[in-house]
Length: 294
Image (tube, rainbow, N blue to C red; front, side, top):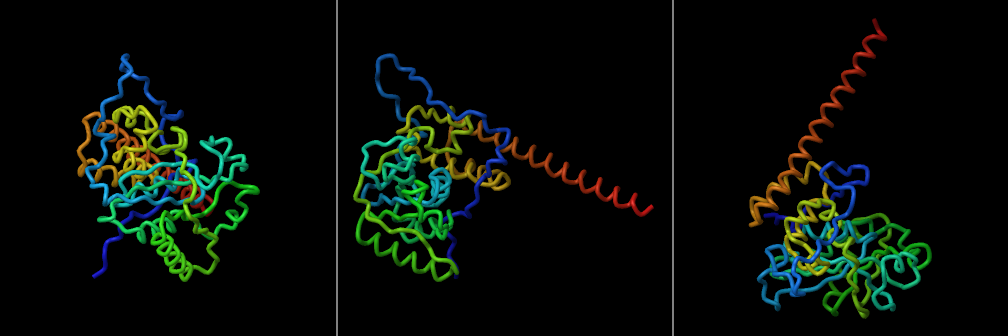
């Protein structure tokens, strides 16, 4: 009996497919409302999942840009939270600009915290191969003309072994050489600036606002933000189904349900208009062809 895949199919929204529910500007961190300098209360969006620490494990991957990769892992069942950041270099706390200049030795990467009872490291590696093209020769220019690379950063010898075995299995299915490096995580993972966390989620201002996400830490720690970002990074038609399923299976505030409901309605309306326009174009072409033969 075949087992259900632990991760959902990978598909991303193209730059040209940005829809009307997405605001033109990225979400801004909300101003503090406490004048006494106290911390914000932990809301439903930022509460850590009640998972015993002995079952929480860490994995770090790099595969082209970190926006799409973070969204891909957000869709994986068993992944608790994700963070985009910079890995592999020597400079302390590099900025995005410094990393892009290619002089720090860092690459864009994603840290994944997962529940090992629900998903294995092997399955995470499988999701990694599906989320990007590991045969892209451009990655060989890392440090020269690009700061992007394909890499698995292992945190212990068991992860190293599983990553190597996973790479071999994947290579056997391809007719081009995989250029992915398997590297020890022997340097600090630096969390990226807030605008790079949960990139697709941040394009929906109302959802972020409904979750009261007010800091980089909250974007990183929020399990709900992790999952919603994964969904919103998919193709429009898939977003409708996945978002509807998510709202039916997770407890969220009425404000979040309302904001997500608006996204669903906008996507349906846009999809209906697209289909109608397509039908009109086809009908026009048929009429023009018929006129030519009259």
